[in-house]
Each structure stands twice: as C-alpha cells, then as structure tokens.
Length: 537
Image 1 (cartoon, rainbow, N blue to C red):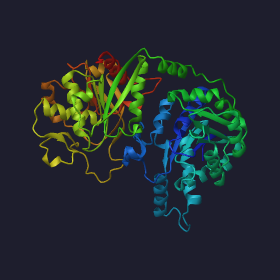
Image 2: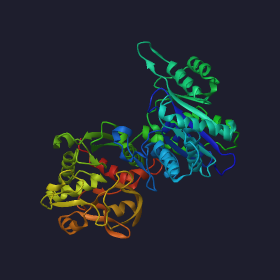
Image 3: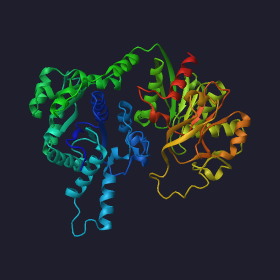
Image 4: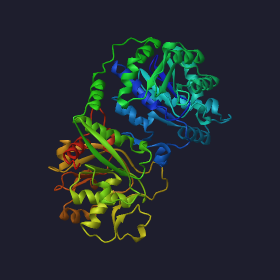
C-alpha cells in the first residue's frame, strides 16, 4: 500500500480509437498540477504481454524511451519527462508482462502454496502494488492506462483501478476518460455516438468517469456537450473539449483554459495557488513566431511512423526554440537509393539510432555527402557507428570495414564497430544492452566540449555494440577525433568528431532523451544554429 496519507490518484483511460492522446493529456495534467505546487508522479500501464517494449519494432509501438536507470519504456514516459520536472524510473512503467512474470515467479517459489492463482486477486494485487510503488511520496499521481476500453488485455488494469477507488475512496480518486469525437464530412457534423458507446463499455466494467475529455478536429458546441453529458451520466461542466493543437505544448494551456486543473483540485478537496504558466505561454509564442527557419533531413528506416523518432523530433524542435528557428524536418527513407540530388536542399542531416542491416547503405551515402560537402551532420548511436564505418571505408581505406552487428559479418575483415572484449555471450535479446545513464569525459578544447561547456557529462544509452578503440590512431591521423570517452573506461568511445568540418559530431548516447522545451539540449541547439547558417536555398 502507498505510504502517503490521502494520496490522490487520477486515472486516465481512452476510448473509440488508439492514439487518442492519453499520454499528452496525462503529461499536461501533471504539468498543471506541478505548476500549482503539488508533488506529482506519472505512471504508464501498458497491457501488452511483452515485459517491456525493448524488443518491439518501432512500427509496432513507436520509439523506445530510456529512463536514467536504464528502463526501456513506452514513448509516453518521454512526454511525461519533457512536460514536467520529473526524473522517472522503472517504477513508472508497468506492463502485463512484468505483472505475470512476477506472479508466476512467486507461484514457482511457493508463495501461494495451497491457493489457486487467479487474475483476481493475485494479478490485480500485483498491479495495485506497482501503482502504489510508482506513486512513492507524491501528493497526486496520474496513471495512464494504455490501450482502448474494450480491449480484453486491459481488463485486469481496469479492475485494479476499480478496486483502488474502493480502497482509497471517491474523494481520493478520479477517473478521466479521453475519447474521440469524429467529424463526418457527408453529414457536416460531429458525432457523439462512438463516445457514448465507449462510456457504456467503461461503465460495464465498473468505472463511471468523472470527466470526459473529448478530442476533436472541430469545435464542440453546447448542444453536443449536453448530449454527451446526458449519456455519460455527467454534468456539462465535466465535458472537456480537447481540440487539435498546432503544437503539443499548447495542450496544458487548453486544459487550463477549460479550468480542468481547477475542477480536479476542487473534486479532490485540495488547497492550492494559481498555476504559473508563463513558461508555456512563452514556448507557444516562440513556436508561432519564429525569426528564422532551417530544414533538417532525418535519414532512417522507420520514417513511415513518425512516433519511431518522437524524442528526436521534439529535441530538434527544442533546439530551434532556443534561437527562435523554425525547424522543418524531412523524413528520408534510408532503404531507398539516395543521391546527392535527394539531399542538396537540406541544411543539415541527422542519422538516428537503429538496429540491423536494413537501410545501412542509405545512411552511409547521407553521411558521406555531409562529410564531403561540409553539410552539418549529427549521428546518434547507430548514426555515430555509421559515421565511423563511412570514414573507415572512404577516408582511411580500411579494407572490409564494417560492424559485428551486420548479417554479412563473415565477409567483414575489420570490425570498426564490435562487441566489448569482456562482453558475455548474448542469451536474451531483451534488456541485454548498455542501458541508462553513464558518465562521459569530453576531450579538452574539442567542439563537443565547447558546446556542453563542461568536461564531465551524463547521458542515456541504448546499444549493444561499441566503436573499436584499436582503430583510434588511424582515424585521428586522417582527421576524425575521439572527443568523448566513458569515465573509468577510456577505451569506451562516446563521441567522435571532425574538427575541420563546420559541424560533424557522432555520439554513442541518446541526448534527445534529456531535452525539454524549457531546457533544450545543447547539442541540438548548436546543431540547429549551424544548420540555419548553412542555408542552401
């Protein structure tokens, strides 16, 4: 059970369609409550049976977000951290896989001797226990339930939060349902029926929503709100419109304008000061009134689903915000045959992380183009590794240069990217990479050290293969320098750069995971600023 007396919980569910915006609503509510001085926590419950999304394709579930302690989590935790001052960890990500794995382990050890292990109470008890652990000492905890009401795999989570209401009391728990109001062009009107059925499905499993948050592309009029209220058993005041926004950072302002944070606080009988939202107003103002603009090419193999690069997308936007530069991102499929004509309109190119051989040739071509034409280049994780391989092949002329990760590894003679000498054989794919925050020492007077303005940094990682330190001397003779190494293990390379290039930096870590609109990451700020000065059109 939770330790804090009278802890408050706000449970966010979703209906009608997936990707309705529960994560952004949860992050925005946490922002508003934090702005009013409350100590908050945010938890994501994912109903899938995977232990974590680490082995999922980005096409399945978007990017994998990594916390400071190395947890591989849903991308919504990225929204939570970007919108708030929170530093989340593994306790803030709960999956069905984790729950069942724990319960089955307990059963095998004999913890349930003499009893039949069942969804109720054993699975639901484990869910409740983890929710309370994630809440910690927070005054208010926002809990997002993934999936859509009606999904069979989500039912244990719904039952668990139903029980929490009974245990904690109605004054300490709120159910907010995010739903979608479609606009039918042929009828020329918004339709409430899908939302009515969604609330009906929610009530059938024991939850009566306290608030209905309605996503729509059109304005919801009074008549529609009254109809939704009637069929949802709610007052009209608790029907909250959430219109499509030009920027996700407007959502806290929308919800505040609808007085949702005030209504939540009154409902929970809490005392508070007014929310200070000046920083969000300033962010939105900068987004809507840029002074300059630049175009960045993001070259990757998951570009058909933008959620695959959610944190990088946001970090690029943040980098532009710092200098009031509008960043136009062109997503370029690295599996297609790329030529200079495909890249010449870009002011800079970023090659993000990834796994496997697919799309490698396109990434190498883009990197070579940047190096040879003095176009700003930013390589992240696999992007850094590809920059090293391209340099080895085309500048150092190292025969058969490649990566141990390659399926054609047997034909590679020199592994520029390799496993560490002391790395254990790979038994499990999940959770077996270098994950989480690690310290990095930056080379004195290197470009990256001047950008950070410090010698020691900490950044988050998610990778299995490393730059082979044995090639350092050859690289540095030809003009690519090691600019950062792991503190305590100098052979573990964290950053490479070409000093004579306007901006050519590759990092083994993922700086995008620590960028916020209120605190843009210095690497992205510097990269965007250089790209803006490199306009080619």
